[in-house]
View 1 (tube, rainbow, N blue to C red):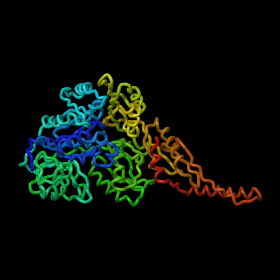
View 2 (cartoon, rainbow, N blue to C red):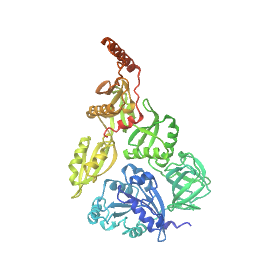
View 3 (tube, helix red, strand yellow):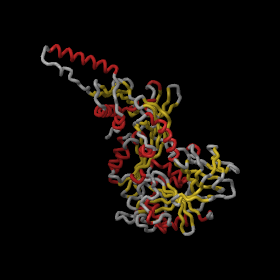
View 4 (tube, rainbow, N blue to C red):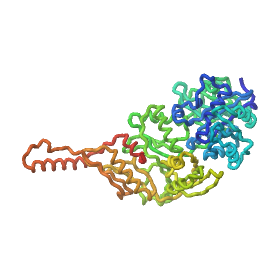
Length: 596
């Protein structure tokens, strides 16, 4: 049964990671009777095995709830900065947000980022202080902090405990009261936005949709405006949270669509759906494509898996439109893909999902970033693969991407975090006390210095209390060089990297030392050399096995022994000239983790 548009509320839950979004979603499901008590489990909407293992939300999840005669379409979003694209897609399908802040920790970096994102989308914000059941909770302090930093009156901040359920009913009433109903006209031509999709092996593409104008009917011929394809709606329904088919969805309603689509490129997030018989004149705005910040090569260990790997990337890109991929070839690793990600955690999650969900065994090269070159003739060139960097004399200068990193930390750790940022070539832009105990530090940092282990260092130096958010701020010229690694005189492109000249010698030395310990010994001596251009900056040697060729001798003149040793030496020299170094695949994985 269709519901009046003025009784619909569409909202997302946004917060910093681990501030209680998924727990709050669990309580809302219970109070609205969407899940039977016997079926309830923690993190109910986190359906992916990886999410439950790590305790983080990776994918947005939508669900339809009913409360006091109103329909609440709720979207639970991720909290980590690497999954910000999921949050931005969710907000395009909403009129309001519930902003959750931990009453023990207060405002964190991602809290601010999500708040500004909601304000940009002109959404109503319902502020909530969660975890009031904790002994360390300081609701008065953090409510005034929200007023000072975000501008939300402290009196408007609701105080709840998602774990115990305290105050959650009042939150549901506030959602109905404060968040406006959606706008839309059922008499106009159908305009429906796909805000998420995933591939099912049996039913094809299943899309999450938000109807803006018109009605979406089961059995209707639909046109996908950007792809230009026409499909019939096999099933239209709502998530309650299980899929429940309905006859139609009206303006402002959120649900799912199954149209038997097998080509994953025809139902991307941001696609506008209309009817084939009476199409809308204009598509909806859709989404701004995210720009990848971290790049790495992914290669199947078994070359026969290449086609399966390409299909897997296509299907996963439907589920997560924020990573990119294009084919590339490596002399050491064979055929693979150069993939771009929003951050290091995003890279790790995508690789893990490819291995688990598609049964692939993959090797990842060292993460890098995208550089811009100005060639001698004035043309500009963008490269994200270090092995593609031309010789130093062929370009005028090289620019690297920079970030504006915002860190919120207890005041006690200010000094050690400033030291970390300066060591990573950072420049301080701002330092502001949010309260006597908490400081916001803003540094301008090269992205290449952040992607490897900056977040781990930040957490260890602040005992886990500091939080990080960042956004790209353009490019700056830098004194950068490419460090190459050669094994037995042959360059191995998988180990090439672009680093600042000041740290190039240290990087070359560490890489050579690491490889010496993990490359298996051969029948001949293997030199490992790190070089910049034609100049060797570090060298290590893997010693050869020595077969005892004199073992069969018994007595006799020493010249017989010398003759055999000389013959062995000559054979080893010939073998070194024509021999290839056998490198097991796991060598690359172990070597690329230089800080292990």
